[in-house]
Length: 339
Image 1 (cartoon, rainbow, N blue to C red):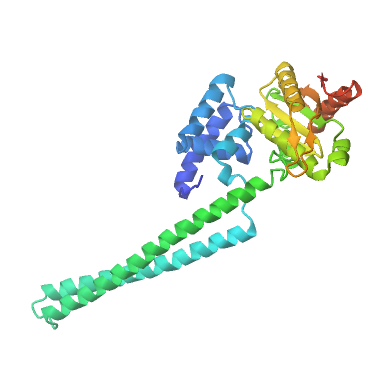
Image 2: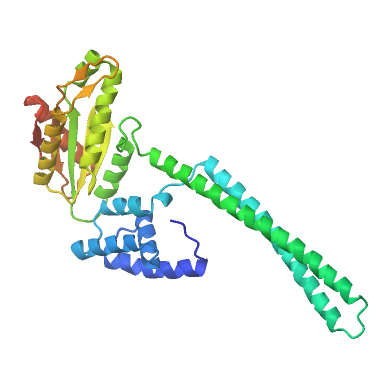
């Protein structure tokens, strides 16, 4: 989403957005300002529809929801650009500005010539013959037309370059939150999300599942690290398939994963954990060259729910405690710790 409003328009949109944020008790941080600024501009109907539904249901936009909305609708503006990309964009803009200056200069000169020619034609004692005036107008018309054509070509090339840079920038922005092996979110994403949710003033909305692949070191030792990575990738794919709506899968570290569940109680979280547990048991991984098959993979799960005034580390500690209980009780099971 690109913003091209002038200062007067921007001020007016902000004057409309702030009272709405106050009315619906929206925390005043930059992410929410961007959401509600865009909302009042009505430039993204899909964002407005989703925000309207959320407000109707909850009377506010609960903590955690704004992250999903931002990622879904405004991802291209979520993070600052790198120096390299920023420099490239500045180069494109500078080149385009210079071309625009040339085009404006030629147009201004042509306008002046046109006025002088009209004055000469209207003059009763014109010094130049009609043919000379006409030829001058023709020559300058050709020059201005060529200048405009060059400028239009450069605009098209600049648009293509900007589009390419935007795609590269979007990819770079997404990569800082994505685990390169499993393609699920990484620990940084989880830490920032929990910090934002736990610092909000809304009622708790989050359930947290911590998951650990059982005996993963033995699996690595027996089948090798390539097969170990393949196992992690299969788990990541499964988690992405199961966590498409109001849930985010995270690689917490090593063979440990986490699932953030928004608007979810402990019963629903336990149901999801057990469904994942059964599906992991059915995973079969075959090495293409050797034909060796991993056919006995299981996982343990710890579940907790957000409590009022939780700090992120308290929430994670409870989920870890539940996971530890699952391991101590024999692994390949789900345990829940509420407080």
